[in-house]
Length: 238
Image 1 (cartoon, helix red, strand yellow):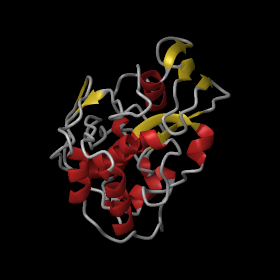
Image 2 (tube, rainbow, N blue to C red):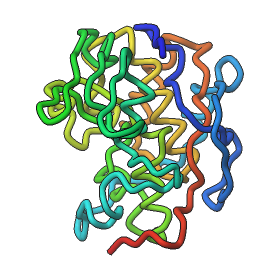
Image 3 (cartoon, rainbow, N blue to C red):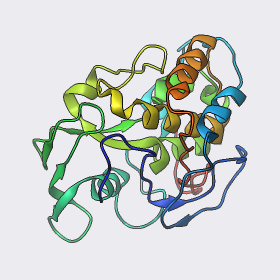
């Protein structure tokens, strides 16, 4: 897969429209996804609900289910699905699921070229909207199946340089943006798309930061796609 360094939109592997999607959306299908119309990202950012950040009380990773659950039922875990999607020159071990090698060329956050090797990876799979941030902006009140869906939704996942990603923590657009300025429009548009799809709110400072970035790219499209917003019933979370 080729991802331009500037990134007009984050590539995703499944087709479920985000624009106009409600939190109760439950169906999706595999396939490529296209962005919305010009200026859609800025308009969507302006439409997000603004509220204060809720307390982090009660948050844990387990609230979003087992890490990298195979919610799309393709017999590969979510982490490997994203590695296959985002890396180049991919090699596998033991079939066509476990990625053993690949190139992140370039890393969207830093602009550097990163080599992935299984077991000693310099590549993370980032939740573009951090799970802790989601918890404090609405996910705390969701049914567990919706939290599991968010944690494994390709729309919210991206292979990135591990060291750069660790500096992000659970920051939102008001507190962290990719060091590579050329990728910021695509990154913020992806955050907007995820928050719109799942009905997450933003803080006032966060929306201001989003709109400031997107004002510099007024034709930025809104990424679309991703899995259904409800995970299959066989998956459980605390």
